[in-house]
Image (spheres, rainbow, N blue to C red):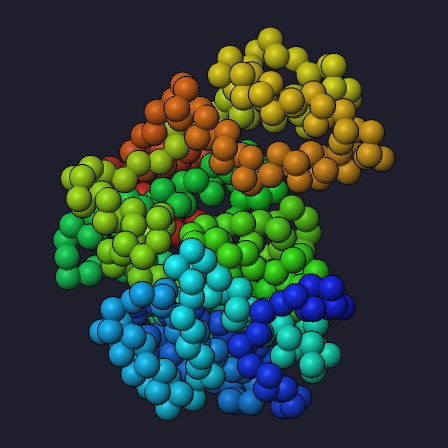
Amino acid sequence: MGNKTFSKKYLKQALSLSNDVCVNPQLQLIVCIPAYKEDDLIGAIKSLQQNSLDNSQYEIHVLINYPKGSNADLVFQSETQLQECLEMGAKTFIKEFDLKTAGVGLARKYLMDNAAKRFYEMDKPDGIILAFDADATCVNDHIAKVLKYFKANENVEAASIYFEHDLETSHEEINKYITEYELHLRTYINWKKYLALPYAFQTIGSSMAVRAGAYTAKGGMNKRKAGEDFYFLHKFTNGQRFGEIKSTTVFPSSRLSDRVPFGTGRAILEAINQSKEINTYNPQSYLAFKSFKLEIDAIQAADTLNFANLNPTLINFVQQIKIRDIIDECLKNSSSQIAFQKRFYSRFDAFMFMKYLHFMRDQAFPNVSSLEAANHLAQLRDNRAYSNTKDALIDFRNRDRQIL
């Protein structure tokens, strides 16, 4: 049943928002919402509150934050939202961050660390910490459905939750770019699934959940200004304790945003400013890796890795990361082929795979349109093709939504 214990070492240095000790034995889930410069924070809270659970079973925690030196209007807006959220029944905090460290990662860390501490005080390592965003919404009963999933899957420590962007906003240009961007996200993960990589999961900050004990055991959230969700969730994906929740849906915002250096809002903003389509990784990079993976999955010794039929740019990359040393170390510490593969893909992890794709993009195979990447994969899987980006996205959504 998940991680049965807390890491007291982690809890000693964990961040806190309150000394309030939770005494309600019915509490099972805490939602964590970081909020910076948000216009519809109340809408996010209302969306979450449309559920069938008793109020004693969950809490919504909000951290309204802004960097030092923020203008008076933002400070006033933040203080006004603090009162509004409290009136909505959310446990709400407000903090001014140093400019150097301010960002969504630090805000999430405060919230999730604090939630873990509350569950520790209750001796509930299986308590659920549910991440959400202040500009997101969800289907009714979202919290109850997440809780139901974890109760039915006692071995799962963390999970990614199904999401969909709104493709029918009032701005036709935004609709075009958000369709391209979400198709990029889905083709990226589906190509990884095609390669049977163990870390083929979406990592969206508003769409993830983790058990409190496992959260502390894996070192908690990081302080990154962006991409914090990618680095956090991939701590859990190389194993049998990660899941996908497809019984509910989160709707991340489709709005433009300059609040983070990358992500949905930034991608759309840059696409509009530069009048260019949103591209994705070239299928040839995945296919080159497929040949490499076939060698790895059947390897018996480091010196038997055969470069003869591999892409020369791929060879350059794996030589730069000293692939034979990695293989040798993994073989020496593995008692079986399955154990070797698990150890190898913990070294050649999701971050390394993304570095590989960027290397291939820069050195050999430039990015292509999301539609081209989707069509190439659809041709391999189903011998089919899509006439436009939206049709491709709808089909990929349907495939991703299938509950197996």
